[in-house]
Structure formats: structure tokens, C-alpha cells
Length: 162
Image (cartoon, rainbow, N blue to C red):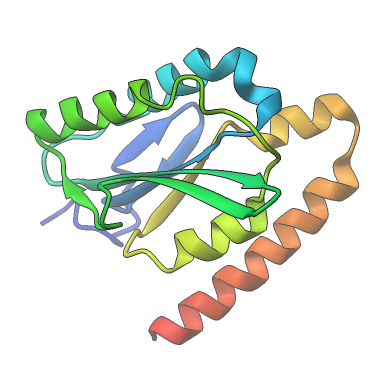
């Protein structure tokens, strides 16, 4: 099949992101600074989900850092990837609607990636796009450190799966 996962043929495009993977995890930052924009974050995830076709599997992992530690919100709740169907899409939208008012705490991006890498996802899409936010804050060093740590985790994860 020409659009088989891992074939290097781009099968998913969204806001400049491209992948040939068909197992997608949407990693959603739910920190308090995004609370005023929670509707936009949810709408962006819904828009990305609507780009997925039949044959894809997907999940959503919302994350935040509380005083008690990282907190995660998962759909499906068991951490699996759901087949893209109209019913699954509707359930995921309901889940995202239920996140309203829950954006609080800080970001635990590294622990969120560690959790995401334990999933069966072939591609992890971080929402929102930190690259744009960090550039606007002028904190490029943080982004570079995060990218380096993320790449190291990804390399370790890939090595463990091979």
C-alpha cells in the first residue's frame, strides 16, 4: 500500500506539521497561562483531529504540573489509541469540551513527553506550538534545551523499541 505508515509518504499535514505516521498522540498543555485560551487550544486539537482519516489511530493526553506532581487527562482513559471513526471523533470532542475550566498549574513538558513516549503513538503532536510562544518570549535557550532533552528521550525510546 502506497500510504503505509513509515513509508516516508506524508499522510498527515496540519499547520506546517507533516508525518507519515498513522498513530497520533495529541499532547495538550493545560497550564494556567493557557486558561484564557483554553477554547482556542481545544478548537485547534479538534481541527487537527478532523484532518485524520479512516485508518488512523489517535489519543489525547492533557498535562499540567500541580504542587502534588504532574496531572494527566487522557482520552481514551485507558491510554490506548482509538481507531478514527465518527463515534471516536465525537467522544474525543466531548472529552475536550470537558477540559474547560481545568487549565491550571504549570507545564511539565518533560514528564509529559516521558509519558507520551510510553504510548504506542508513532507521532506526538504538542499543542500549542511552543516554538512560536518561546520565540515571542525571547527564550530560545529554553527551547533549545527542551529540544535537546526531547531528542535524547526520543533516541532512547527508539533504541528500546528496536
